[in-house]
Length: 227
Ligand code: DC
Image (cartoon, rainbow, N blue to C red; front, side):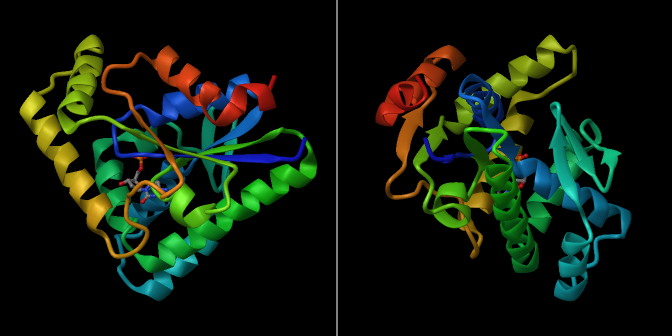
């Protein structure tokens, strides 16, 4: 069986990461969280005072080595797994993702990462999760999924998660931050968030994680391919 590439795109807070990670594990594929790559560059960008020059951003991207190991994210050898999840880095990541220089550098790194893994023969394939995988980074992906849910449902899930962790949260605030990120992701000039024409669209609104996973596996005959 040849190396398989699976693209999972969708808006913020839809639960893509969990779905993609579980799917990758189940079918012995590498899981690539491309959002974490934007977050790593945002982390370094913040440390440098957020310069907006294309040249500096290109350099920043080219001088940043990002890799994933055992569920952890490393940025130039530093474990940034927790730090890149802060609200501050979320907002910087959203801003830095608008710059063409950054999108070009990360697309190159994402393709190089998959090439390296394909050649190493360690995995059966790669599951990449993001906003533009099926449309821009891997338009030739073997399987493309677009997972979606209404902003209200995504905000509610986030609200409940925070409550569970005893973190104070305001539903309206979460909803408006989410709407703002959707707007930015969908309306940027370069690689805007949208489903690829040939993507299978899955509305996760009324589905549990297990149901979504089953849906993905059953879809497009994937279950047979990985049996
Ligand atoms: O999925 P996430 O929240 O970790 O993504 C962080 C930011 O990176 C988000 O604002 C959108 C951006 N992003 C992107 O533009 N393209 C991707 N393929 C993945 C993330």
